[in-house]
Structure formats: C-alpha cells, structure tokens
Image (cartoon, rainbow, N blue to C red):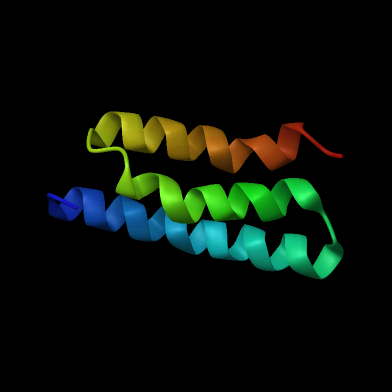
Length: 68
C-alpha cells in the first residue's frame, strides 16, 4: 500500500467484501461469498489507483448481474 488513496480504496472494498462474504456465508450463495473473498485480496496486488477502483467497481457489480 503506497499512498493514502490506495489505503482508503482498499479499506472501502474490504468492507464491501466483508459484507458480501457474510451474506454469502449466511445465505449459502456462492457468488457473493467468492466475490467477497476477492474484494478482500485484490487491493494488495493492484498499485494503480484507477485500475484499483475499476476492478473493485466491477467486482462489486458482479453479484448483481450473476445470480446462481
């Protein structure tokens, strides 16, 4: 985590990921569970802020469009 913007966006996506993880575990839904885990992990590997926000927004939208 290089800059404060990276840290802030990582925390935002981590909190959203925690919500998806809890929901997926409680409801037995695989997609929110897996997306929640990805939202925890991906900020550690992406250093570009714009790419971080784009990938995070795409991951947040996946459970809305992909319902299994």
